[in-house]
Length: 292
Ligand SMILES: [Zn+2]
Image 1 (spheres, rainbow, N blue to C red):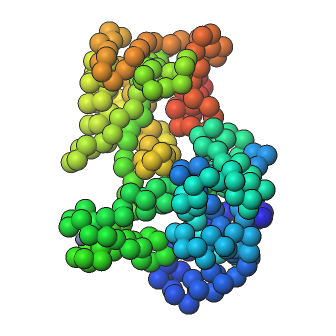
Image 2 (image 1 turned 180 degrees about the vertical axis):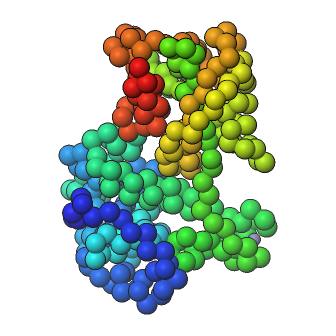
């Protein structure tokens, strides 16, 4: 286990340093971040970070590894344990923690743990979805400690992908707009969001998505903050924007419901809730409450 105060140094130079990588792989103290089909090992609100000594048997079985970086003086790898069919029956895993979706446990965790698990999740998701070359269909193999995949047929190199997406909190006077997508948990509403399209500026995307989803023209588009969101591979860019009118025209294919909320309603929600503190949506809504 490692000290929570140690933040990850991605130490990218090690990715191409075979000697250093071998030394970390052969060091029993090396830390592993196991990921099973998008889920993480968690115990008592903390990420379980076993050592090579504890889970090295999976590495010996050929499970995929990707270099994450240095935690203090120890190397750290993401370990894909997805090939295990029934993780609950694997003694080695069952003893150390439970598999959980990061979105449900992140609120309890340290920032260090959350960013470490997000990195491991995103990187391994990309590996599992890039087994074949997008150019020729040939098989790909990991290179550079899991930060490149190379096609064994045409030699094309593939790099981890991150898709930019916008999230915008649209306000009109002293109210802000929150909406529900059909797939949201029961009762949850959030800020509008959508993916940036090829060739588009982020601000254009904010304008377009707001127009498409709720029929509102916006102005005063201001960048707020961003959040790595590897569910599965996005980068959320948060914006505030002001609507020119309050007449909502809902796109029913995209949204189930959208309406204006006052600060009083958001301060003591009745019959609805908005995303928890771990999320960018929460911080956007909090910024609106703090405007007052
Ligand atoms: Zn190829």
